[in-house]
Figure (cartoon, rainbow, N blue to C red):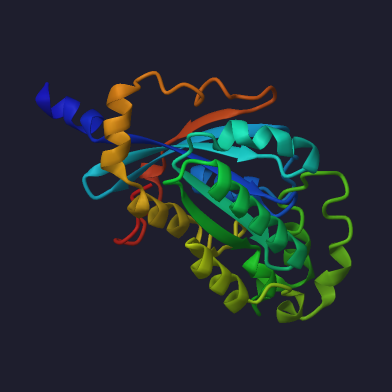
Length: 257
C-alpha cells in the first residue's frame, strides 16, 4: 500500500496557460506536446481548450493542466479567467510575423502585472521550420505550417504566396532580438516547430525545472479545492488526458512525458 501511494504523494498539479496572437500555432504546440502529433488544418480555438499531460522530472510527476486560449481579439477579455492562479505560461509568437512578437510582449506585460507574481513565463518563437533551409521548407511545407492554427478565417490567407521565397528571407523576428528581450524580461526562451517537434518538449521540461514545487504543495494543502481551475472551463472547450509514457524515449535531461 505504501508503494502505491508514493507516486500520488509526489504528484504536483501545475496550471499552465498558452497565450499569443491568432494563428501563431498555440494549439499545434500543445497538441504536439500532449498527443505528439501535428494537424496541418487545425480548427480554430473557441474561447479555450483544456488538455492535460504528465511530465516526470526526477522523483516528481507534474500534471500539467493546460489552457490553450484563442488568439482572436474578441476573446482577449476572457484571458484573465485562464491565467488567474496559473503557475506557468507559454507566450507564443510566429518567427515569420514581426507583429506577433509585439503582441507577445503585450501579453508578457499583462501577465507580469496581473497574474501570479511567481508565474514562470516562457517565450516561444514558433514555425522555425519555415526559416530553416531544408527540403521540408519547400512550398508544400510552408503551406502546411502556415495553416497550423487558423484562429480566424483570414489568419493564413496572406501567407501562402510567401512559400516560394528562400527560407531565411521569411524570418521577420531575428532570434537574437527575441532572445535579448526574453533575457531582459526574465523569461525562458525557445524557438520551436510544432510541425517537426523541435523545441516543444524542451519548453515544458525547462518550465518544470523552474516551478516552485514545494511552494505549490504547501498552497495545495491549505486549498485542496483549487477554485478557479476547473470552474473556468469555457463553452466549446475540449478535454483530453493523455500519457505519453509509451512514446519514444526523450533525452535524459528532459522530463519523461
